[in-house]
Image 1 (cartoon, protein in one colour):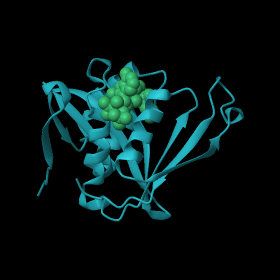
Image 2: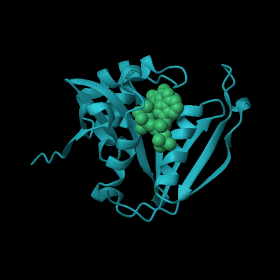
Image 3: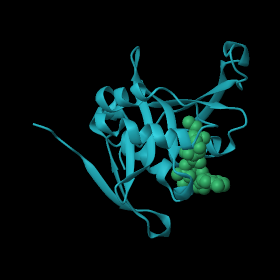
Length: 179
Ligand SMILES: CC(C)(COP(=O)(O)OP(=O)(O)OC[C@H]1O[C@@H](n2cnc3c(N)ncnc32)[C@H](O)[C@@H]1OP(=O)(O)O)[C@@H](O)C(=O)NCCC(=O)NCCS
């Protein structure tokens, strides 16, 4: 039996949006959303975004408004550290930013039963991405958790193109696991 959990929410400015897990068929719309956010996001293959919906949906999220996907977060539990959630990409449509969609997706994912054991959230952020830093530092503050930073990948790892270094943000321990 297909079990679907959806969450309708009014955000700041009265926007009515729906938070849910991504499905395989959302891949095309997610690809377009990420494309519209690149740069600073790296655009991956369409196939990759179908895989997120097919295999990583329990720990990922999309946000719908008027049948359009306006928010996307991909994340997974680290295979060798079951209490660590790694957040990979967060994308919010330009017209829908600053109303709490990104923050809401992180809260939505962490409130799911699969994340009950999560004590640390990790993500990597390029040095110039101030909005992303603000999102994750705000998240840490809201949870009363520490946020530590260390180098994850320096720019020499990205040989073909110019790419900033990626800093690993490790937030935790998380004590408030549900909304
Ligand atoms: C980064 C991004 C995902 C944030 O999404 P969002 O839905 O606008 O974020 P939220 O509304 O949940 O706000 C999160 C925090 O950022 C702050 N913020 C959001 N937009 C802001 C803006 N334009 N100026 C200053 N602060 C801003 C919010 O006040 C909030 O901070 P707080 O927790 O201290 O209140 C969005 O800007 C985006 O998609 N950027 C392009 C892609 C990207 O860089 N992704 C992140 C890297 S993976």
